[in-house]
Length: 248
Image 1 (cartoon, one colour):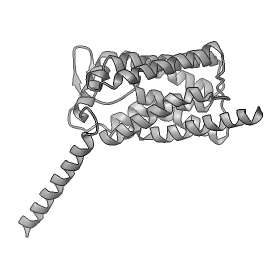
Image 2: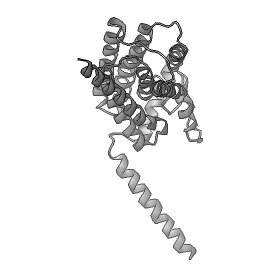
Image 3: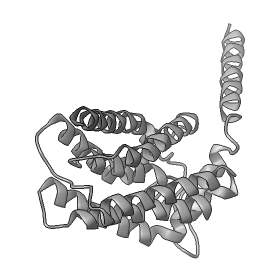
Image 4: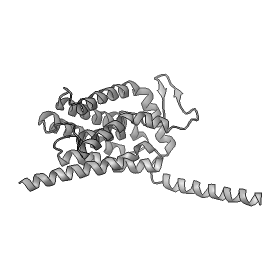
């Protein structure tokens, strides 16, 4: 009987392994390769990640408490986020394991240019706080995006996978100043805007679907919130557009 139980467990493990293999074959890279890229990136650019996290905290607090940070400054910060993730992460690192990252890089740089045009030059983005459901969802996304590095660290396996390099601590996990937390933080800020052009929502929504789907395959649970972010952002952008069309 013990031998039969052992054989049953072995068969179950084999089936689970085959399922994982079929799932991972949908991506052009393995989970191990993905984490290695993140480890190299984090070791090289951890000061940038900390600086962008601190600047994002200041921006979020300014919005939630109606602070003095200008709307143009906040839009400029978002543009820095998207251009950094596009040029440095996607083009500089992710292309090593995924050729489609060149397309992602172009999309992220395009989003940065749209933010500069709409938020900095034309001053169309005005961020505010309130007690409506939209404002509360915006605040929740901002807080989640700022907590993202810590959530991601808690999801790391405790198997000694951290390592020191000549550049710094190589942590094989998405932390900050990478595409998914950038998208989550952007969704929170755009939800807090008084008016949201549909053009500013399309790339974040598209990346939320792409990144969220990859997260399901790779088991990056911190990124599962991307689906909720996409739904909320698309709902708000379409509702704002419908009101604009009705007014005309």
